[in-house]
Image 1 (tube, rainbow, N blue to C red):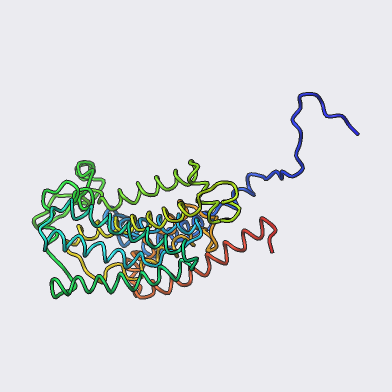
Image 2 (tube, helix red, strand yellow):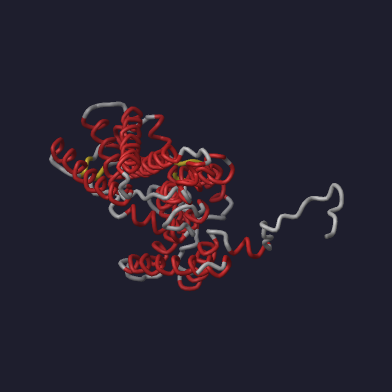
Length: 374
């Protein structure tokens, strides 16, 4: 037996060293990174001369990507925690109708209407989480029920009060409101004016906007998307609560044994999912100046697909906010790229199904290849 030198660290045979390449391959966002590169290369070839990568073209698919990203961030943290929320799409329509009814038809200040919509939506999210925890039912079932309840309630509230499913007048009610500006305004307009003066971006050549830049600012929707991505990434990777999220989705029983408040974590993630859905709804209402009862249709599935493309496991305990954001970016680029390339827009749904299947297969194969799982 060879004596261990005094003061030298004791080697632990249970710890397996991994190379940098191996660690890179098991990153959850690897597939999304590769997919994003392929998508950009493809559309650079087939739609590079159509204006897709001009300033206004970038803004088009950037806004669509931001829409996907906002709801994907909430879905990502919830899926890592081991749960699903299928009520996100209905929550978007419901929150929008609440804002419009309170502000336009009941005369509330817009800021109060927005805050009320957030409170109601987050309480519903908390109720979803509470039911999942207390009943032991799969979150798929509980939130599927919420999907139908919220959609029906949204339509009922709209028709019973206004006799229509689309409520206008929101833009007028939001004039001069400080909180509405945080969801419906634009920022950095002076930067784009300077870029236009320098000749780096195009300007309108005719009409009332002649001489003005084709892009006059960054919509608050995109700012919210970036802010949520940064917040959720830091929360997940740099805080104890982020470790709790992973532990709750990976092995809830073991997490409870070491003191993780699994129930509170899961309920908090349902609340956060509802919060993200309401941000989306508020930005959409301010953009269109109206609320519609059918808004948000199928958004819950698009959010889940973006998260899965980003490398998250459907079983929980594994995933990445950056991966989910890349999945949302892929969605936005493809949806608008098909338009620029002159391809039938209905094929976007075909793409969603195909890329979901490929993402799951790729993620499963890479994980098994590297970890040796069967």
